[in-house]
Amino acid sequence: MPQPRPDPDADLTATVETPRRTEARHPAANGLDTLPGAVVLGHILAQQQAALAAVAPAIPDIDHAATLVADALRTGHRLVYAGAGSSALMANADGLELHGTYGIDPGRILLLMAGGLPVDARMPGDTEDDDAEGTHAAQAIRPGDTVVAVTASGRTPYPVAVARAARARGARVIAVANNPGAPIFALADVAICLATPPEVIAGSTRMGAGTAQKACLNMISTLAGIRLGQVHDGMMVGLIADNDKLRDRAERMVTAIADVSPEVARAALAQAGGVVKPAILVALGEDVDSAVAMLKDADGNLRAALARIERAGG
Image (cartoon, rainbow, N blue to C red):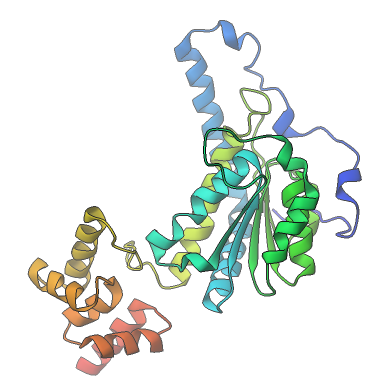
């Protein structure tokens, strides 16, 4: 559902405080600490399921966000994640997976987290209020980049400052928040509202809000990967096969898509340096140079390259 967007030049930190879902108390919270463990867990699970249900109304906006992400990466720009606390952890978990899953150059992914990425179990809370640091961190953002700013409340100073500065620097901004009418939506090209219910532990947005955020981010990056041609029939043909599990997966993908034996698939992968998409074309009879050129002509889209082989053979 489109979110109302107030004046983007307004002082968001001065917005009049209004009741927020992310700080409200859950109806099941009364006496929670006196209940049997199984009952408590049932309440937690029910709230997690309700949080996931809150993602569905945002699907049109998530679709739009995936288009912005794919367009940025396709045109040589970068994908930037920004957040603080548990929202940043959700964002980082998504960004750190994109190289291995879809072969996206890690240099094209920028992770901005209030206080920096943790190196131990300490994650100070005060860093989220440092809007000056958010503005400073955003100096790394370039025109044409796409920024995904994640904040459960929608008003956390660090990601709000990153979003504001990114917008001023010519980047696109996707804002993900869990409160309707969140101030950060004023700064967004795409505003994604995940209106999750109150947390069973009031204010603990690593729970339901975080679950909805992670699902939303999974959806954005997966659809972007599909649009970049890194998925074929549900298989991650852009993966980086850098361990035994992924090398086995790569072999199975070449076997299935090219309809060849595992031995032929293994040999094709060896010729293609372990890269799945050209290995599939090699398994079908192309030499490595031709396979790479065909994929380049097809903008990396394996299905388009396979169609060209089929037309040539037909």
